Length: 229
Image 1 (cartoon, rainbow, N blue to C red):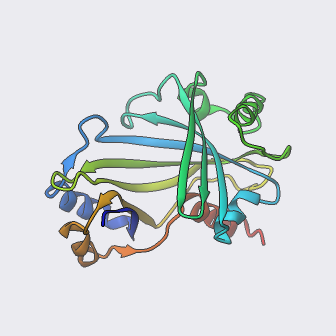
Image 2: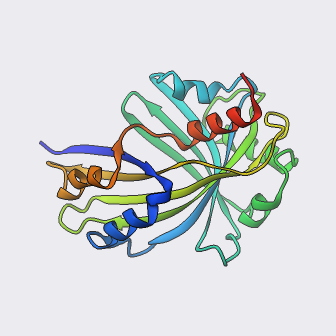
Image 3: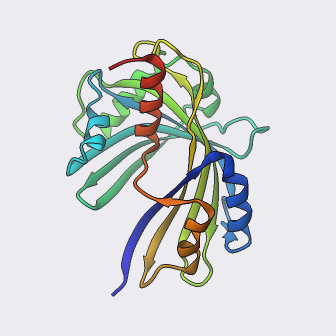
């Protein structure tokens, strides 16, 4: 019986170059988007309602964000972005995505209390989800991503490292210095009848299979830095 998998392996970020070299010798680069920098601004409420859904492993979870891409560090972000709602009901996942003319350059530079973010909130509501009135942008997460394909099974993989919070909302986190996570993540997705041999060997490189949420981990790091209980 074929099963759908979404499995994550966590590793120490300072070993990311070793793991990347090892993976490059065993997988094919994605033919369309082999590498890029991904940035997202996440929205939540004053009492961190959507974060709590994740922490508490609620059966129903929602995540709201606006995301944009850069091909590499030297190229300016694109002239558009994507407004996204991620919904999880039990083990079922669904992403609702809408292209926006808000540029990545603007999102990279704008203060998180800029009035244009109210327009994004209105778009969330137009996408069919009931959201609270007090939702607002809380912080940005950025990271480097390499994408790969396993030629035999067709499974897709991605390696994310240098995960950071380059921008935060001063209303919730007064200390706005950029922070970096100590971990990177290697993720596999697909429908297979058995794991590829690659997966069994990842632990030899110091990778550990576990659940991982960039949003949750970045919040914990920011919370610790700001000494907020």
